[in-house]
Each structure stands twice: as C-alpha cells, then as structure tokens.
Length: 182
Image (cartoon, helix red, strand yellow):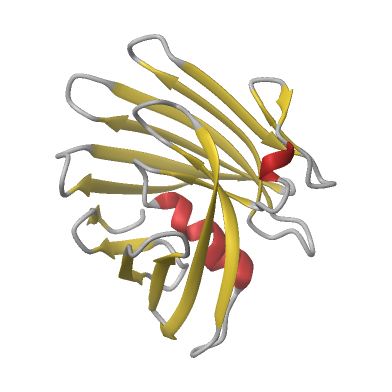
C-alpha cells in the first residue's frame, strides 16, 4: 500500500489517499475533508497489459448523504448511477474536481515522451453537485516531472509537478502534496 496526502490550497481541504495493488487492478481509497463536508471515494483502475491506469469504477459518497456511482466498461460504455451515458463515449479517464490524484490517470496511461502532447476527454465529476460531464483536456509533457494541463473548452491551464511515479506533487493554486508517498 502507498499513501499520499494533499492540501487544497483554495479550499483548505485535506485528502488522504491509499493505493492498493491487487491482481490486475489498482484500488484507490480516499477521504477528502472539505470542512463542513467530507467526501469518500473508492476507485478501481486496470493495470493489465495494454490497460495500465485505465479507469473502471468510482464510488463517491459524501457525509451529507449524496452518492454517485460511475463506471466504464472495457468496451468504453459509461454508466452513471446505472444509466448509460453515451455523451461520455470519448472519455477514458475520470477527473474529480476536488482531487489531484485523477490527474495521475492520464499522465500514467498516456506515458508521453518529453515534448509530446495529447488531447483527451475525461468524465468530469463536480464535487459540489456530483454532476458528471465530458471535459476536453490536453496534457503536454514539459520534462520528466512536469506537465502542462490545459482545458480545451476554456482558458484554464497549469504546469503540474509530479514525482517519479507520475503522482501530483504541486498543482499551483489548487493542490500541494503534504508528505511523500510511504
């Protein structure tokens, strides 16, 4: 098991995430303390050949009783709370607005060389509303431990620093890692 912790710079949130490898799955379990509300999520990612870091399942729960279940089948079909979501067909990764961990998914899955870029679509989960929507993004690898993240449907962009495993260390203005993996 590997543990990571981040502080939300704008929100004051604290996230505590455990990564647990198991067979051809990687399980992430996290608690995000947002002050008045606490979010807990469990996520499963493929680690098998050809599917490294591909999103499969998310279960999100809040201390105020909200729930969200999101899944992506091997054939690319997405479901949100049991209903098929064809508008997410182009998405491969999930992006949680309240967690820097989900930036690691495309970083690891794409395995870009320095100087390369990739346009992707994520299933973006808004932490306040629990709404899920397609979100076009671009990742560019600047060097071995830096990526530029860009929103393709807005003007938001940040240079993200990661560790040797592609896990976010610094996401300027949004998140900062508190302790090294352990």
